[in-house]
Image 1 (cartoon, rainbow, N blue to C red):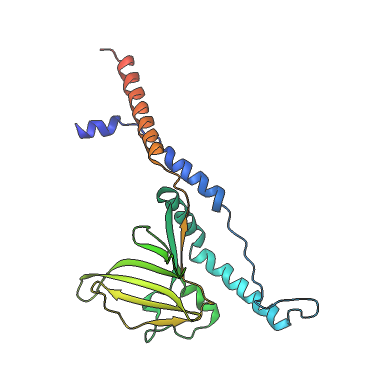
Image 2: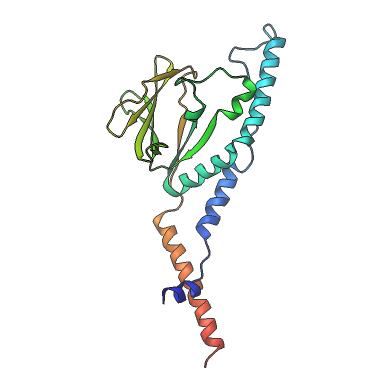
Amino acid sequence: TTLAIQRSFVSQNVIKEVSNRETMAAVGDIPYLSFVLRREVSPESPATPEERLMLSEAKNLFDEWFPKQQVHELLKQTAIMAALTSTSSMRFFIPPVKLEGGGVPRIDPTEIKDYLFVESLSPFNATVYQDPVTKERIGLYAYDYEDRETKQTKKYIEKVWIEEGLTNLRIEDQYGATVDGDYSFELNGLLPMFTMKRPILITGSVRSNQKALNNCLTMMSRNTTQGGFLE
């Protein structure tokens, strides 16, 4: 009976079409990004040849890294998730296997594309929380990790926050104990995680309309079959 119902069921995923269309309108085109100096540039104080070379190298590295890590596709996934749930997050990270001695090794700048990764996170596992009083922000990401030796799955939470101009990272286990201490990075006062928030696009009424459409399409198919084969 269940198999017969599945075979006769007709659906048209309008919700997916609407979500994809809105996402393509918002982030459909690959963004063009350029790099500028932090200091003010003027006719009296133009960029030096060394600075122009540095900007050119940074742009070339970014143009290699962006498609390699599929950042644009991850950005679209994050936008679609935000349309469904009203919030979604992304984070930059370096996999633990790439670290040496608990820190980031000294590498040639051309190798950064093989170290820095981007991940689209579930809104149920990650968020950037802002304290309503101090307005300070902290990034939170909960995840499961399977130990390769014991084959046991353990729960961890990653916390990132800004303190005295430095970006701090702490990983705690399921018991609240800190793993390997805290790390501090100079990231110009930025978090390696951000949360996208927006009014929810796929509301309860939209879901009800989707169910009604699927029901009508299914009934049309059954009525056509029964009307065409009266015996």
